Image (cartoon, rainbow, N blue to C red; front, top):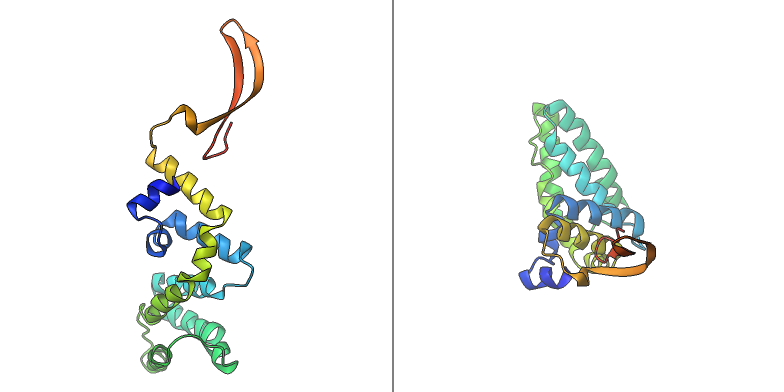
Length: 178
């Protein structure tokens, strides 16, 4: 399946990250299996959550929380890896929201592209080599429902003998199911 996806150009960050299944498996890998913590994923999730909120009051409250938790903390520890222009834009929107009580849903949207750029390199390469990517390939194979051949199965021991001959246990190579 990986060769098929490589041939079609489907193995790149944007294609995988922008699919629901690809995003969920990548998120699981980052939060549970990557050697170093990847806080950008939680930041990304909070921004998406803010964009989906209906009322300005909820957006203002969550916007302050996001700013304090992900931006201000990093600025104070001088470990903020995002551009100053983006920080200034968000701070301006939050300050205006205090006066007007209106916070646009796209306040933090410049951070989305910067977050994607920060996880696109080494983290994504490690994901490609992980069992989570293997699982992604298995699901894509199931989704695309490519033609089955005898090579897609590995034959195990004899389970029994009957009127029609021997019955063997077989395992599907890509999904691991018996």
